[in-house]
Amino acid sequence: MPAFSLAAYSALLDRMLEAGADLLPVTSMGKSECVPKTVFLRHDIDFSLELCVPMAEVEASKGIKATYYILLNGPYSVDDKNGRRHLLRLVELGHEIGLHYDLKNYPDQSNEQKLKLESEIEHLEHLIEQKIPTITMHEPHRTAGDPFKEGPWIHPHNPILFNTVRYVSDSCRAWRDESLLEFFSREEDRLLFLTHPELWMNDNIKDRFAYLEQVVIPSIPQEAHAYFTDEVPLIWKRHLGSWLHDFRELLADRKSSISWLSKEQTTERLPEILSLFEETPELPWTKKEIMMDVPQKWLVSAALFEEHVLRAVSFNSVQDNFLYIHAIVVDKNHRRKGVGNVLLRQLQIRARTDFEGIRLRVHDTNVGARKWYEQQGFQEVAKEADEEQSVLEWKL
Image 1 (cartoon, one colour):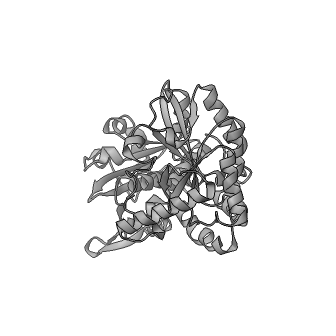
Image 2 (cartoon, helix red, strand yellow):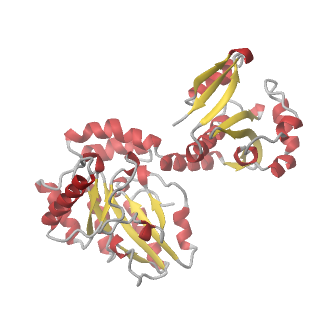
Image 3 (spheres, helix red, strand yellow):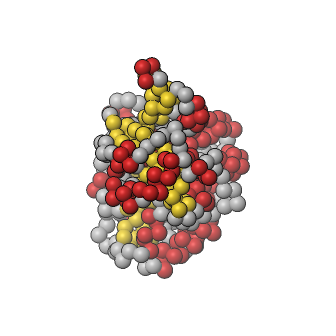
């Protein structure tokens, strides 16, 4: 996957062009004349107009036109001298300008929302002296829906358009997966490629939070700093894309892999799995417990391998729409080395994707296990005094 730098972005565009792709703005999504391999370039300007201009210049130097969505109520202003200068530079470079509307600044009534949207579009059109043909929503995770997705403006998430493309985004300076690479192996593909150009300005800073502090915050007005120190880090920490990106890199660094265990796979590896339990006296499981069928066990149980050697397993089930952990066991020679943390992280990702959270029972005498789970964000939600154990729960 490309690094977050202008050089890497430029190389990615070249590779797409060499693959025979058309690189087009969002308003071309509904046009039938697009070639079989097409990339619709979308840029959401959430943080800084100034920081997005270098990417726009890279694209223009290659004769590429992209869509830049402008936020009128964000941490930058299009009305002051510098803000308007940067905005007009995008227009001068030949790029398409769209409105990035933020519903948290809109009234609650639908008719008033429409009037607010129209006034923002009119204001942006006045600034650039061009029509605004396309809109998209800022921070959709904050609201239950998008009232303008299917309106008269071209909206990249309108189902009629969105269902014809694969969507790749760099939100939170992270790649949710490696599906971008599939573009180069497919004979036909339509890709909606969303980037936030402000995140591509310095590849030397790998940590996204250090990048936020050292690159983004110095470029924004002082009055917006609180948003970037208080809210943005929390959004980035919770975003599924950043979880998946960091987890993928963690597995690569540790030369590890995780597989979901079917009943057949468990049977094949039963001697190895039994040896892990034999080394874990607090969980005296035998073949009977390991192979016992419980709801959805063979969909949510997992094994962790390091360089193809089994290091840990977790047997789980699903109850009341919670992933329920029955056992996590780690090779005794690899305990306290983060193996259990990695396996649990995979379960947390699965839980936040498909379920309400994770639950488990821990015996009151197993102080070490309880402390470990609490360090991973679990909290006690019930006490079972007759069984001398507690129910712990994790939810994002």
